[in-house]
Structures are given as C-alpha cells and as structure tokens.
Figure 1 (cartoon, helix red, strand yellow):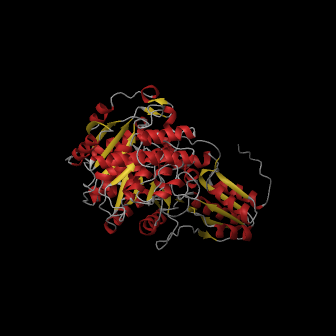
Figure 2: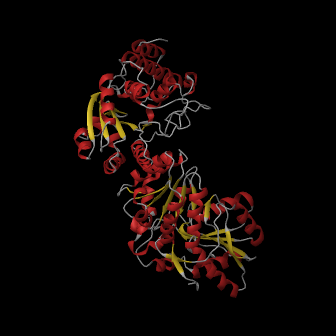
Figure 3: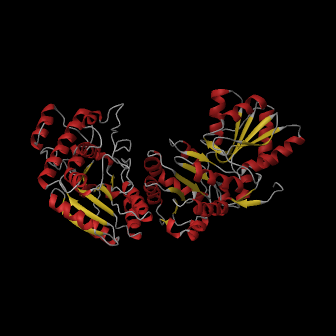
Length: 321
Length: 275
C-alpha cells in the first residue's frame, strides 16, 4: 500500500451533504433503507424534514426524486450501487428523458464490498450508466475528490449525474485544495514511456506500480480519470501521442467501463495499443476487499506485469469472451 | 374555472374524442382506447378542477397533472390544445418527425408536467411533486391518472406506500378502470383482486365513481381536495374506447387506429359534435 492515510468516501459524502444542506435550502436527500451505510443519515439527522427514507423501494425512490426535481428541488438519491441498477428504467424514463437535476450517489460498488460477496459487488454499473443519454458519470478517487464532486454538483451540476463511491476507505491521493472539474482528468505522475489511466481506488495501485516500473527502467504516466462521461479526450490523445502505450485499470468490468471509453477515443483519434485491466466477464466473490484484487489478477503486481508487456509490445495471450 | 357548466364539459369531451380519432388516424398508429376512456375525466380536470393558466404554465402555485398511462397521449394533447396551451393545428404532427407531439407524453409539449410512457412511474413522480408542495407550504394539488393494467406494476404499490407514509392529502390519483389492456382483459391477463380493498389497506381514501358521469367525477375530486391527512384514490369505472361502438371493450383498439376510412368516418359520426 502507498504510505498515505486512507479515508472513507461515503463519510465524506454524508458530511458534505450536511454542510451543503445549510447553504441550499432546496436540497433534498432520498435513500432506500441504507442511509446508515450510504451515510445520507448524517444529512437526515441534521435536516429530517428534507430527508426521505423511501423504504426498500428503489423504483419509488427514483420516481419520487424525479417529481421533486420537477418541482424545483436539488435532489441527491442514494443506495448501494447494485440496487440502483434495478431502477434503470425509472432513471431512463423519469430522470434522464426529462433531463432532471437528480444526483445519484451510490456506495458499495465493485469488489471492495468484500465479504458480502458477488450479489453485492456490481462491476457493470459504470457501463450501464454511461449509456444513458444526458447522464454524466463520475468515479472519485478519494475522500477529497468526493467532497469536491458533491460541492460541484450542488452548485453547478446540471441534468442527471451518477457518482460511484465505495464501502472501503481509499488512500487519500489529492491535496486539500484540489478542485474537481467535470470532463477533466488529473495527472498524478508524469512519464514518457507508457500511460496508466485509472479509475477509483486502482489509481493508487497504479501509482505503486509506477514506482516498481521505474526500477525496471520504465517511466509510467499515471492519470486519474474520475470523469468517465464526459471523458477527457484531450488527455487521452496526448498520452497516446507522447507515450505510445496505454494501460487502463478499473475496479469494474473491462466491458463498457473506463477501458472501453479510452479505447473509443484512441480508435477514433490516435491509434495506440490499449490494454485493459479489470474484471473479465465475471462476478465477484466473498473475501476481504483487498484480497480480491489479487484473486482477480488486478493487484499492483498484475498492473506492473501488464504495463511492462504493453510497453515492450509483447503479444498478449489472454482471451476474453 | 367555474364558468364551465356540465353541458360545456360534454361538448369539450366530445371535442377531445374527435381529436383523438383524428390524431391516431392521421398518425396511422397510437392508442385510442385508453384515450377515449379518460376523455370525460380530462374534460373535468382541465376545464373545471385544475388551477392552471395556459398563459402562465410554470406558475409555482399551479396544480399538476401527471398522465402516468403515457400512451393516452392523444387524449392529453387534445385537452391541452383545446384548453389553449398550444394551437390545435399542431395536433396533426402527432407521432411525426419534427413535431413535439411524441408518441408518448412528452414534457416538451406546453402544459405537460412530466414525460411518461413506461407504466408505473407517474405515481412516484406525483409523490415527489406532492412532497415538494408540502416542503414549500404550497396549496397546489397533484393529480395522477393511472390505468388498471398499470396497477400490475410493482412500482405503483411502492408509490402508494410512500403517499400514505407522508400523508400526502395534496395527491389525488384517478384510476381509469376500463378493464382492458394490450393483450386482453385485465381479469384474464392478471387478476389482482379488489383494488378498492388493497389501496384502502395501504392507507388511502378510496372513492369509486362512474368515470363517464361528470357530476360524479366533479364531486369525487372536490371531496378529495378536502382530505385532511390522506391521499385519495378515485376508482373511475370507465369503458375502453368509450364513444366508438366498435372500439368499446375491444382490446384490439388499445393500440390501433381506425383500420379504414369507413371506420374513421364511423368513429367521428358516432362521437358526434362539430367538424
């Protein structure tokens, strides 16, 4: 692990909501019986009249969010990532088609859910959300970026937004003054030989991998692509031109996630090899969150190996369905 | 709004029905059956009970209507145009390219509060609008029209729970109970028992009326508006395809226009009114 402290993204979310509740009287928050886990309960305790616990009824939560937004409210709605997906159609018809200012902030995404196992570890959500017209998708890398994203959405966010948070605490990579800009990436480490573009906690793995690669004489650039849609095309093309090789790393399926988005850009604008690291058409499983990265060949060593292979332009023998 | 007498409402409902037939026949597609069944309800709401102003469609104090059964768009578009939200001439664009009149209810059309079309979502939207009205201490009412086939959607029951929990006495649902859905009769496709008993047990006030009787529609709505701490669910017993003999109670005309020029002319003749 990197020698930096870790902090909870969902705590940061709940605390930031509470702070924003004082500033925006029209801010309302909805949850579906998971508020003590998503941390919207922090807002709920401070502003009980503007907090609606809709019960274990996610479809109702999303449609109600639409109605509140149609009546001028700034809406945040939360549950676990996997359970929001059952409301895909409510999100599509009632929120995205009406192009409403509704912010879906989900927690417990990906394999870092850990012990609860495959049923709760969604690795398809970013792809599902990216496909929705009007929907914007953000995956904060740490607690500092989480706060900045929530501030941005409350102040300037327009239309539907999806923000993907985690159960586990993640290493704090950003400096305190960091400011999120929708559609912009952030380069944590410069490098000329190969670029590792990461999403979420895997950016911290990529930084560790970059240290090891340095010892092998490979100078890797590391980019945090928290804004998945809109995506930072400019940074991707620049990385393609300057480093010639791109590796993507994500706590998500390699289908329809970060890697796919990056490959869309390179295939249209500047051809370079894009090697994707992530979940390969599979469900997760029970175990400690951090153990699972090694189990699914998504750990630091796996990033080092893949990046070295990409840089040296070795043949890649893995087969994906 | 009180200037509209029952005789006027009857003429308005007739105009709505004529326009429904004209729109679906011109579009060669659309849903006449469930539009005709709510024509009388739409006439009462848009010309008597809704506090709305076509010249000020986004007034924060206005009443809201969400047509959850969004396939009945011809009925809603007709009512809105007659009420003056947009020129009646635009109705000919229904379901055609370069027209705002999307096949299913679309918010781009003046007077429409929410895009709908996938069943089971409008009631939840209405819950949100009613909650916002409470938060803002507004006196407006939110009306939601749902279909009886739509009651098969689980999300309807989720929203019913929420309406009762938050004591949304500013929320009024009207069920267009016409007994027919796309594939046949609701009692055959999915018998769900007594909606009256079920909704009542969910904590709502329930009123049952003849959905083609203006007096009953008006008095039910007036009673619902006076509710102290419960949302109201009005079961309006209606006839699918009401006003056109060959469409009445015929599942075929849930989603099909008149099949020929003869059928088209017969429909208009039976509906009556001015050309």
